[in-house]
Image 1 (cartoon, protein in one colour):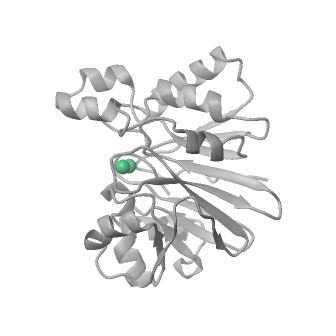
Image 2: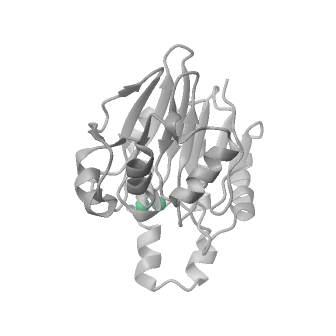
Length: 255
Ligand SMILES: [Zn+2]
Ligand SMILES: [Zn+2]
């Protein structure tokens, strides 16, 4: 749908399932994106929530209520988010690191290092074809569980949140800058590149850079810096795509 510091939502559709990962954009915007893709909100099986920050859940409560879509998260996120979400249509709890089956997909919530109650990223697998994709945003550092579960996927969506120089020279207060750079914050473009070097495998053909800050980064700069790191490690045959905070990303077909 879109991704950035101001709102994130990713649609994953398989032969049978249709799932939203986070809904940090307005309902109106998400519905207009679904409409462009010719998908009815009724087709959405559920909205998985990674953590309680507004840029990930801002539209989730109203979407759930108005469109009768179940929300799914772990207990930590539910407790931290329930007041902001308001009344919801249905809520289903999952355990971090225990797979959830939705029709032909298996979703594994993997713990991440970020300033939230129980933040996770997601690995989505279609057991029949063994195709796997990962949605990894809002991580301060690459931790062993992420390295273990998110390696060698067919498609990886990874955050490249900030350009270090832009952040350092930017207008954010010093404590916020330090926080963003810290282990519970976000990945810089260079850190995203270095993380990719660790996570990419022979199966990985597509990468989408996401959660690109509109204050401390640009999509072009993220692409350039990450490409440079990858080239330094001899990786040149990758489809490195971008996501945008204010426009719908391209549809990426994994097969
Ligand atoms: Zn975020
Ligand atoms: Zn966050």
